[in-house]
Length: 162
Image (cartoon, rainbow, N blue to C red; front, top):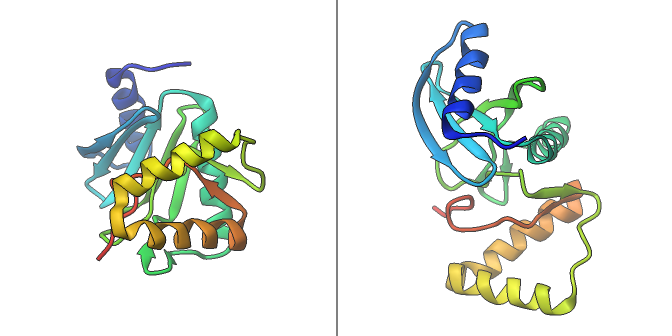
């Protein structure tokens, strides 16, 4: 199922209304969905398809099991609630420095990419992050070794530094 921007907002609105809340404004959007701030100071993410919704929900559940609110100095949103039918997650809002967006992550086993794809990914990320790239690698390795989360969709909008 792929969704339009209007459909994403409509499902987010249905979700918050059912909980006595309301949307305040859109915080961001990407290929997997849109994120909205609520008047209750939470974030609601509405997804365009089931796969990224399930991956992100599984990652946030794992982080919640381990009571993770911060990783190596980066705040991580806390999962508050969700609706599988609407494909909507509700989480806390975090301020920089932060790490967010686990829709492109995998639990326990990452996809097997050819070496040249991995090399190109590292080069692209190095160009995006510059001298912060070693810090990003440290966060990704910690996330993988400690919680079994392989975060592949990483860019300066979803990991910030203080």
